[in-house]
Amino acid sequence: MKKLLSAVFFLTLCCSAANAHPVKVTLSNGQVVYLESDNYQSAADMIADVIRLENQIH
Image 1 (spheres, rainbow, N blue to C red):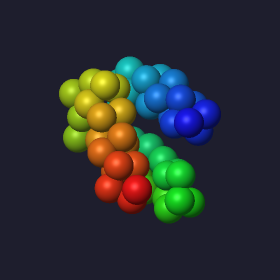
Image 2 (tube, rainbow, N blue to C red):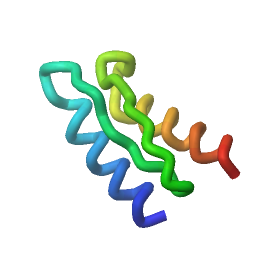
Image 3 (cartoon, rainbow, N blue to C red):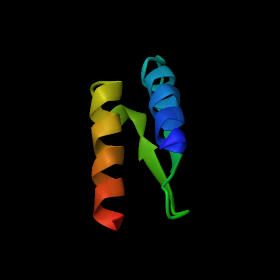
C-alpha cells in the first residue's frame, strides 16, 4: 500500500508536467509497466488505471 501511495503522489506530479513522457510504475508483484502520460487527461485517470492493473494481478 505504501508503494501505491508513493505512486499516486509521483503520478500527480508527473501528469501536471507540460510534456508527455513515459511514467514507470512497479506493481506489487514486481512487474514494471510504463504508462504514457499523454494518454490520460488527469492524474486521477492514470491512478485509476494503475489501481485497475493492481486488481487484475490479485
